[in-house]
Image 1: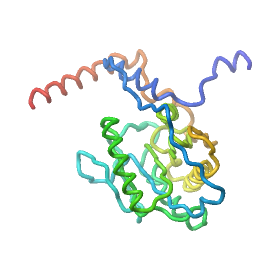
Image 2: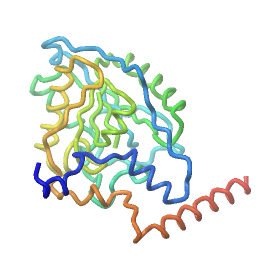
Image 3: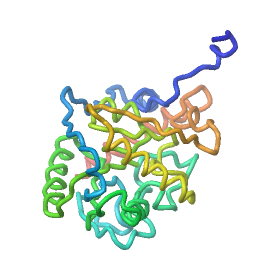
Length: 163
Length: 104
């Protein structure tokens, strides 16, 4: 690597753990956020060719426009794809981009197209919205609710799309 | 599996599979208005879904944000130009929260 290149080199991705710690420290908060961490991560391999038969569900951190406040974990119909979702209260880069195109953060149309192509079997009839503004304990309880709904809907695979 | 743009937060948590999309936070499924990119990103996620053999598998999407790289530095920026303003905003927020608590 040349000296010139080395001087401009950077990690290829932004560390939001570092950025948010420094940002909130600059606001005078002295206790850094404790990010969720797990030693053990569950895993189930997918057998070859299984994808075409799978039912795929989606979990989003966005909520329907006009959803009751305070937000609680909820299920919404997957079809038709909502024209907009409420994102204003979430932390995302409001200077660099926007969320006016639901397909940019909620892959429902792309999933329906994948069904038509035969890439996956089906899309779950419900999409699940999970709040992000509270404790990890509450989020774990939300996860139990979502798992239960997924079982009711015979969902095989869940795609989580945090904004 | 996760499709997301905050790679370090997701990897700190630990998930079975992550499709990392190196975009500003807000559009993990593709740039707004770019339906082709959104379809291709989903295909990348489905490929990861079917090919990963171990937990904590991260695949980085090859897409690059078309608006350049300024967002990397600008998001949650802290420097001499805004340090005082951020501290003031934090003090005001804590005062507002304290007042709210005091009022029950």
